[in-house]
Length: 182
Image (tube, rainbow, N blue to C red; front, side, top):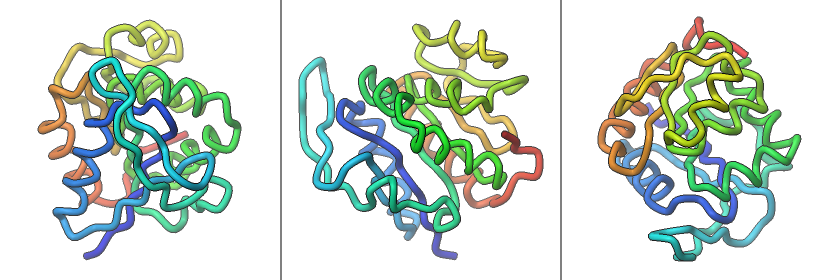
């Protein structure tokens, strides 16, 4: 069954954390739209420098959670910090939890989950430097390659992408997760 997946990102996303999940989703025969704050392109971050530009498929103010089966949140230091400043981005993220749909966030990507207020009592992992932010938001943080909690998939860094991609697809195939919550 064909699935539509939203990838929410803006300038400064960690390139591998968008490119690898997007390619893996498309290998399943699914559509993976890059959703961002503005039209045009967004610029990746790789090895401490700016990298390639990626086309934005849908502008956030025109995106509707109902059109998607799941959400992917790439990391990078800059990307999640810029997104969490935007109420529309925070609301878009929260809407996936309210609809009980799978959400996958890697590295610094889980930071926006703090602002979406969806971490209370959830098991997660992330890049180590945001561990305390997630714990202060009520999450149970663990240092694992990938953590799955009722439709929420999280990983620590680009080294975890193979496990992250596999679990992300498993959760998306399962569909609605009744215990996913906002």
